[in-house]
Amino acid sequence: MLPPIRQKVMRHLDIVGLIQPALHQQTHAPSPDMIDNAHFRAYTRSPHDVGGEPDIPITWEEKEEEVWEHNTFVTCEVLAWRGVWNAEERRRRQNVEVGQTQYLGLPYYGRWLLTAAKILVDKQFVTATELQDKVAEVRRRYE
Amino acid sequence: MSDDHDHEDEHLHPPAPMVDEVSEFEVLEIAVRELAIEKGLFTQEDHNQWTDYMHTLGPAPAARLVAKAWLDPEYKKLCVEDGVKASLDVNIDWVNTMPTKFGTPSDYCNLRVMEDTPTLKHVVVCTLCSCYPRPILGQSPEWYRTPNYRRRIVRWPRQVLAEFGLQLPEDVEIRVVDSNQKSRMIVLPVRPEGTEGWTEDQLAEIVTRDCLIGVAVPKPGITNNAKRPVRKAINPYKH
Amino acid sequence: MSKPHYDREHHVKKATGIGDPQCFKGEAPPAKFKVGDRVRIKDLPDLFYTRTQAYTRGAEATVSRLVYESPPAEDESWDNTENVEWFYSLVFDMTELWPDYHAAFAKDTVETEIPEHYLEAC
Image 1: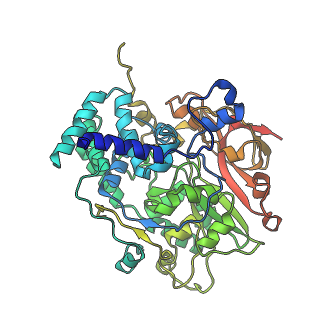
Image 2: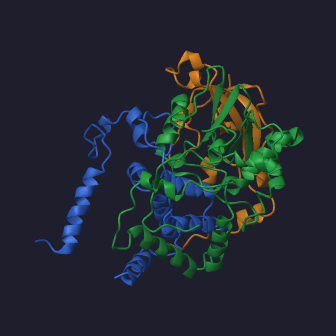
Image 3: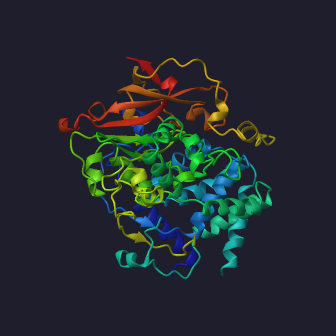
């Protein structure tokens, strides 16, 4: 029996495998001759630019908002109000730099939230260690 | 204007699953907010002020703008020429209403009012994210944010509108407005028949959020968005 | 290595009481196109960030309105706001964008906004 943390790690690795986008070809750091210019563009595309992509009809839904979703929206706006980022930097980070897998895989405000955390570290307002400690400390409040 | 979240809808979607642990989203949200405050990037007061501002938002001012435009041709002209100036008449100042005094960061200050005619029907999307005129229309619905709506409406608008219950004859031009930069759009629909002699209040009631996005048209007697399933939150925010 | 300094005040100073994009009014060179002009969207390299949708590239459109002056999103996203240009609202025929769009609905259109440096006359 694996210790709980290792069980968690194994489950994480299983899920990562399951959420890889289907690319229909081997994609493990290919040699340059395998990437023509069309593939270069496809791999470097901005994942937010979805207009015109084929898709099938879905059920149109309304949705209740989670408390953390509301607070995330407000935090992102207030960070912009106080000049930590502008709206355009935010949209790039939330919608493009998260990459295709997170873009399609996480909730709308989940991307906003990760990006809000990242801007604090990227612009050196907090260190990565401070963020990690804070997350661990908040988690402990709920144990 | 009433909302979809009434109790009759509950059977349309099962309740959210009960969970006995705090989610990583909740933990990270608290961590980020507290760190930003500790580092002096903003204050708790800033955050509260913005929440208070959010509580004032909804589709009512946009509905009111449409009703006024239906009754006053000069005002309609102003709406189409300068949506920001026209918004002042429904008590929305795109620059100064919000705590920033330079507009909301997400929404900028360039409202465009897209006027339908009997042969032209607008419908709004943002294919790149989900830009939406929050200051005058409130928060966007979940379906508007989906990649699915954003993928399909710019290419198969007639099919998508049919899924919303709107079928238009071929002599009507559908114009999909892709809100991709700093402008934000609302649709000014055609005033429907059967509303002759109505007051501004009566007219505003039939201009629903869906009509202002363009996936529905106003009809006498219809004062709500179409009924749709409502996805429940685990820990819902009470507006 | 020392930490970079981010001027967190510059946008709020420029835009307070004025709004954005209004705060960039008058900073762009004269507009190259006018309402009614036919333009084609250049297929410029789109590394890292763009808000000129892939589906518009190489397509022709008609200018319906000069909407405002602003730095292009591609620059503003890194807080580079020196090069301001005109933004145009453009109307595309659906049949121009989508070869399989049914001829019965040939009147249908898309309207979207594109900055001047993506446009060429056609």
